[in-house]
Structures are given as structure tokens and as C-alpha cells.
Length: 472
Image (tube, rainbow, N blue to C red; front, side, top):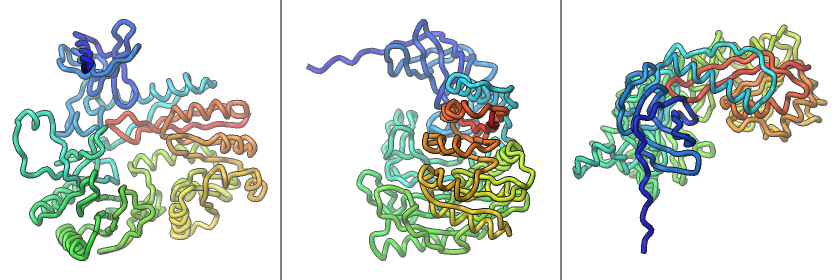
């Protein structure tokens, strides 16, 4: 006999009190902490519990009794379904306030180190159309919204191009208009979609790994250049001909595209790091510009996705580095060498280290492109490259700038930092929680003297943070 499913409670007239991780908010009901999406502190709501453990639960708001004064009207038609931009319902000033609090809470509760007064968070001047890169997925399994399901309509067209639904790897929400990237991105995506519908192109099936159209990437830049990369699964010459007819249509319809590229991918995932990228029209790259420096950005290059805020972030890192022109600087996790090249004019020499070989080649190109002769770049795993022997060979750095991935720095890397003993460490982080953990490990030799949060991603819970550490 099947076990009867336990009925989960409805919690009535609950006041939302704070924000929580992953863009959710929270409420407390007696000893129970309840996490709720798409609500803001001050909302009074009825909550339907969806999942319950001993001391916490996950719930959704099913009725609003009072609206919070912090509440903003979401501007995107896909809000609440897409899974992105979860804070659109929270006024931007309040988003910044909670991001500042998030940084403070992480550094105090996890780091447990002595901290100076934090600088006010730097908000993004653009809160819409601020990204320079988006990727869209083609799927023959369109996600149906609750309203569409209730209509009980049989749909002739179940293809979609858009974003993956959280928790459903094979379902894609059809996007009509996204507010993250310049509207040209919407026009290109919708034009490709309509052409594919009209000419009977097969959208990819993520379960069976069949179908021609897989993925597309759009990159815009501060120089006005535009890159489009189409990713297809090509099984025969007819597929290849269909792909090229589509590319010709895109190139003819959007003459502003300066780099039109394609990848033939028959793997089980959409990563292209190990695949050749072919040029259909234009260049194999676009350029970004910052303070007169030009940065070459290819289809596989990493570049901060909010160009204007990246400039503000790098200015903070350069200010914290306190360079006078005589310093040896190590730039760890250098990527395509953006920070390294950005600070090079104020340093004697900058040495950049990065795991991805292609990124290091881009970094060298960017130095040459800008006539910069005082940079050196090395590719390899950070903990393998940055060793005591490396430091003995290249010299002890006066300043280390580190911008690690979300997981933070490996303990081996931290130990080498402690061995190197630079005067200053500038720690740029996209995850204040792992940054706080690393600050604690550095605390014996370094004290935190400045903290500057930076908002790179409006309407999300993500926040960057720059910390200056000075040798005790």
C-alpha cells in the first residue's frame, strides 16, 4: 500500500522579515525559518509550504494581504517563471542596501576578522540592458506556464529558444523580450526563431541529443561591435547547408553584426572550449575599450558581463593596489589579462597567471595590442604555477591582486601568498562567503583596511566585493 503523502500546512498572514540566499526572502514562524521566492521584506502573505525539514521550510506566497513599501513593479513579462532577475520586485535602492548587508554579514560571521568601516556599495548606473553577453538555448521541449497548462490547449508548436527553467534541465522557457542585454539581442533571437519555424528547422532535444539548432550566444561591446555565435549539431551535408542558409539570412538581416560565427557540436553538452569556431562573416573577435585600452574578446574569452561596472570595479582594484610605478605586481586568476593590462601603466612589471591557456593567449595579444611591454603571462593550475620556486625565480611581489572563481582560493595558493609576503593584497571576489573564509586564513599576517562592495548584477542577489589587505 502506498504511503499517504503528508499534507503541508498553509501559513496565514505571515510578515516577510529579511532577504536570504539565492534571491529568496525569509520569514520566521515560531522556531521555523521559511524561505520564499518573489516576495520582499514587509510583505504580509499567506504561504503554502512546499517542503519542510526540522527547522526550516520552503514555501510560495499564495495570497498578499499587504504590500511592502519596498516593493517595485516587475517590468519583465517573464518575471517569476524565468528564474533570473529574482529581485525585480524589490526597489533598486533596497537591493543595494541588502547587498551591502550581505557582504557585511559574510565578512563578520564567517571571516571573524577585524574590519574597517565599509565603503557604501557602488550601484550600477544601468539597471536594464546592462549585460554584454547572453546565451540562449534551443529546445523542442517548451516550458508551459501555469496559465498555459490551465488552458488545456494542445499546442502545435512546442519549440522554444530562451533560458533553462531552474530544476528542469530539458525544459526551456520561450523568451519574447529579455531586459538584460541591448534590444538587438531580442531582435536577433526572435528573427532566428521565426526563420527556423518558417523553414522547419529541428530544435534540439536534450534527452535524445537530436536536432539541428542547439545554442546561440550574443555579445555586444562598448565599441558598438556585435558578435553572434550559432551552435548546431550537424549530422550530414544537408544539415550543414541548412545551417549556412540560416547564417546567410542572419548576416543579411542584421548588417550591424561584425562577427558572425558558428560551431558544429555533436557532444552531449554545449561547452565549446574544445571545439573549433568557424567564421561565417566578419572577424573572429570584437573589442572592448577602457581608458583608451582595447581588449580583444573572442567567442571563448572571459570578460566581465557588465562592461561599465567592470570599469568601476577595476578602478577600485587599482586604487587599492596603491601603485607608484616601481612595484612588481602578481595578478592571480588573470583571465584575459584585463586587470593586469589595466594596472600595468602604474607598475614596474605585472605577472598574470590563469588556468585557461586560450585566455592567456588573449592576455598576451591584449598587451601587444596596447603596446604594453611590462607584462608576463603564465597558463596553468594556480596551485601548480604559483609556488615558492616561482616566486624565487620571478621575485617577491610588492602587490598581489587576486580575483578567484566563486569557490575562492585553494589553501595551497593562500600558503604561497603568506610565503610571498607582499605589502598589499587586493582581493576581488564574486562570492563574499568564500572571500570571508580566505580572509580568516590570511588574518595572521594581514589586516583588512578597506572594503568596497560593487553591484555588477542588478535585480539579482549577486554582489562583488573588493578588499584591501595590508601586511601587519
